Image 1 (tube, rainbow, N blue to C red):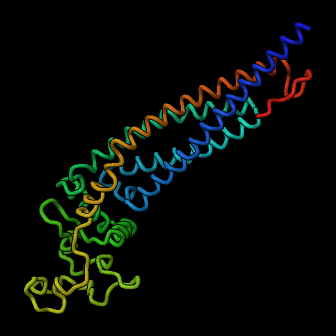
Image 2 (tube, rainbow, N blue to C red):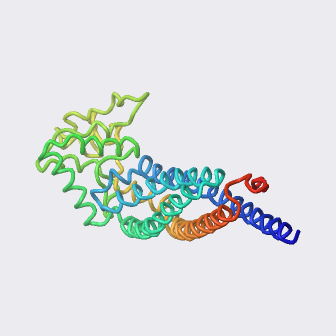
Image 3 (cartoon, rainbow, N blue to C red):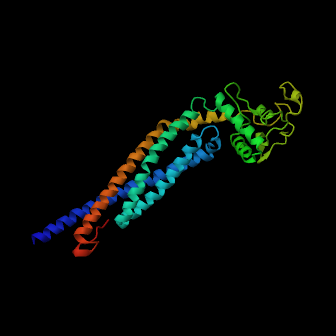
Length: 304
């Protein structure tokens, strides 16, 4: 009788522990699922809307940072689903694999914090309009012309069309369209078509981008030429100037301190999730050693 009571008491304790571990793991993995989606979305936003990857010629961290958080977001998302399924099925072998994989995400998560710091340093405090960054942009475009790299030129065209800017821009001048006159290393007569104002998705008929620089005198603001700067429907503000303004207002404030703090907290949360998963595996193993799998020895499986 006493043995039966003791066994029932132990079984009840184990079931209670299993229930707590399951609830904790499902809850934590649900949170990490949301984190994974958020990280992936943030990374894709930086890549698509803020052109980070396209600007990697200015700094390698503008490529490393968004790609890192996008990859981490996807991995966190899928591992969270794996954790929820393993917890629900009470499969301790899958849980061990899940715990190991989740533990492997901790170091990359801390690395993303470092990458955010480096990306912030390269874009903060007028990072885009500093002389060395302007020189890098000039070198990149010149190399594209020399090697006939249309992909690099088309990538810059995408930036110009999306941000409605043209050319370079610098700390000394916000205008950048004149840059295209010497972008290829010699005097060019053509402006990039991507500098034209778009009307119904097409370049304005008032944007004579071909031979735009043919008549130097017509570029003067006091000229009455049909193609002068006042009448020509082109974007005049330099892209580096626009990028600097956008990053200062919309990107840098989120990199520090919000993303850095959130990234560290997520890493700590992942460590806690791994610890709970291992604890859950230990309880499952103890139940198996005492009673076998669910339903054996007259013990009902945990209701969770």
